[in-house]
Each structure stands twice: as C-alpha cells, then as structure tokens.
Figure (tube, rainbow, N blue to C red):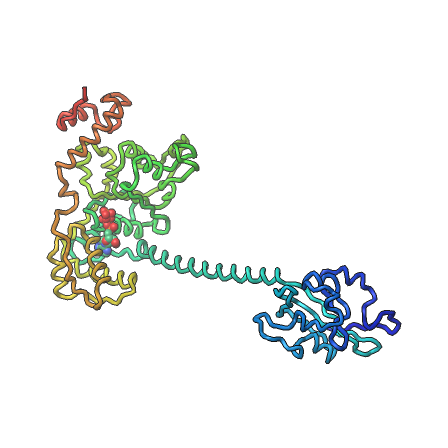
Length: 486
Ligand SMILES: Nc1ncnc2c1ncn2[C@@H]1O[C@H](COP(=O)(O)OP(=O)(O)OP(=O)(O)O)[C@@H](O)[C@H]1O
C-alpha cells in the first residue's frame, strides 16, 4: 500500500484532499490526521458510524475518543495504534480485527486502512478509511455455527449409519444357524437342498425357534441372494392394511390413501418375499395370494392395471396350517401351493444339546452389542439351561442370557436368576388347543355370516367368502353350533 502524494500547487490547507465532495459522498468513514495525530477531516459516513459529530472531534485526538480500548475492554495505548504508527514511520497499514467505540459506549468491528499522506515528498499526515464489518462478522459467525451444526449432524448421521449397518448385519449378515444336534444338521441339509431352487417353502415351528433365520438362509444361499429379501409379518396388520401392504394401493383407493404406494410384492420383484405368520391372512388376501403364485400377477388395491412380478415365495407359520384348512380358515388350494417344500424347525426342548453352541453364539453377539467381555456361562448355569423346557425357544434363551449379561459384573455368567415357569409351550404345530381354535373358528365364521347377512351360498355368500363349499360351511355351522339369531 502506497501513500497519497499531494502536489505543491494544492490550494488546500494542510493535506485536505481536493475533492471533498466525493469523500463526503462515499459510504466508508474517512478521517484525516495531521502530524500531531489530531483530526483535520471527518466525513459524514464516519459521523454516522461512530455517533461523533465532526465538530466534536476536529482538532482532537481520535484514538482517545473511540479507539481507546480493545474489544475485551483492556486499555489500547496510543503507541500501539497502527494509525499513529503510520504517522511516525510513513508505512501504510490494513487492519481488520479491531473495534471502534461509538459515542454511546457501544462498539462495532471495523476494517480500516491507514495511509500516509505526503506533500512535496514530506509526510504531512495520515488518512484512515474504515468500514463497519458487523454484518460480515455476523455472517462469518453464522457460517461458523452452521458449519459446526453440519459437522455435528454429519457425525451423528455417521454414527447412526454405523449403528444401523450393525443392526442390518445382525439381521442379514451373519445368518449362520448354530447347533450340532441331528435335527439342526438335518435342517441345514434341507435348506441347502432347496435354497437354490425356485420352490415355494413353508417353514413351520413354534415361536422363537428360528423360522425367520431359516428364511434368511434360504434367500442367502439362493440365486436371488443379490436381490431383495422382503419380509412381511402378516399378523402385524389389520386385514385391510395387510392387503394394501402386500399389493400396494392407488391414490384414493380408500380413506387415508393419499398417495400411490407400491406393495411388498412389487418391492420384492426378482427377489424373495417372506410372509411370516401366513395363517393370519384373510380369505380374501388368500385368494389374491393364490393368484400371484399361480400367475405371478396382481392388481394394486383400487386399480385395474395388472402388475407382473417374478418372486420366490417363502412362508412361515407357528400354526398347524392343515388344521386351519380343516377348520375352513385357510384355503386348501393355497395350502398345497405353499407347502411345496415343508421345513419344520424343531422346538429347543427337543434339541437341548444345541444349547452350549447357541449360548456361545449369543454371548458373542451380546458382547458386540453391549460392549461386554463375557466369556462363558458357568458349568452349573449351563446345567440349569439344559434342564429348562424353553417354551419361548431360542428367543427366550437369548433374553435370559441378555438379562444376565446386563446384570452380571463377572465375565462368567452364573445364571442364578429364576427361569420362566415351565408353562406349556406356545400354540404350536403339535400343541394347539382345540378348545381355543374352535372358539376362534366359530367367531370368524359368525363374523363372515353377519357380513353377508347370513347368506350361505351364491357368489356373494359366506361359503364363497370363506373359500368353502356351501355343504362344508353348513356342516361346520352345525358342529360349532352356529345359528342365525331370530
Ligand atoms: N439355530 C440358531 N442359531 C442362532 N440363532 C438362532 C437360531 N435359532 C434362532 N436364533 C435366533 O433366535 C431369534 C428368534 O429367531 P426367529 O425370529 O428366526 O424365530 P421365529 O421362529 O421366526 O419366531 P416367530 O415365530 O416369533 O417370528 C433370532 O434372533 C434368531 O437369530
């Protein structure tokens, strides 16, 4: 930065610039100082920014008026001031980390230059040109805050992503099936045999035995492994919602369908669709499912356009599906379509020898999940586990070990806690209660009869809705003592 040179013929007093009009018009504040450091020129922009009128400052030491302190309030000696140093050494300076104080005691961040003024080769004073940079500083501050927020969010997202990846790995990655019993070996053999075919598989077994795990293994070992595996728990949806969940819906198909939505069948195209708790499908949904299996096509709810899909279907149930067929709750034709290759997952009580391997598998998973360093279950603890009947199967075993891992201070789990009472196993392929099933069947048939105003035969009658011949429905009604109310 060079200085300002006024020529000898300048008509102005001292170094006052010739074009004062222009200086008065600019938006930067401008001060002129003589060699004593006193103000000899102040433009209106400077007055506006500082609140000091030129009449109050002219002839005075401006540093003492509004450059006396640093932002933190500490004293700013005149000797350190760049403007005064320019007066001494004639070297131009540019500063942008200081504040000027206003007449009312407030301050503003300032950017200024201090430029020496020469006349006939002699230093005669300094011009300081300054700008209020509050907005720039605020913008910088907001940007810094925004950047910090973005960084924090990015870290949060990255850790959430890591967590979700782990969760996903839990669900999809390590799908190996633990166990050394002959039943598990046979199960693994069946999986290997059928995985690479396109056959529909029906997995049955009590809750918590590992049916979903089997389905994941079937998909993983199949030709479709690099395509999606879409899982639907049919018991998790009401019958209306389930249909639109499976087949999708058009906008306006029903109240609340505010936009068009793809169903799971479409999402699973080219991959595998796993329908868990398939026994819970309504008879209407069963008819639709049958058609997808037979023709690989369906329509979205509320649409007449046919959608074609290529899907490998795996289903699972903890019910005795054949019994549901006998009870008229499940279509027989669909049952045979689903049951092309049946796989039965045995309850844990029938393969207690799998417990040690399952336990060490579960401990590894838990150490990862909980950040613990559990090594094993004590000998006595293992004995207790081997004596339990495990009505909740492997899921119950997982819960017992997890609870103990959280409570335990030691690396060896003692399993001194009370195991769940030896209740009867959950409703199963073998142990379902006829009593409760009959009650459920009665309830269901009565509901359909009420919906059809007790019409039994014909295309809109109850028998058609239930997928039964009318003679079968009549005999079921008789057996279940269902009569039309008078
Ligand atoms: N042989 C096994 N080896 C390792 N983990 C297993 C095994 N069997 C089951 N599990 C685990 O037990 C838990 C329950 O298994 P899964 O969800 O597959 O059971 P399910 O029969 O589908 O249960 P539900 O009928 O309640 O849906 C899962 O975390 C699963 O990974």
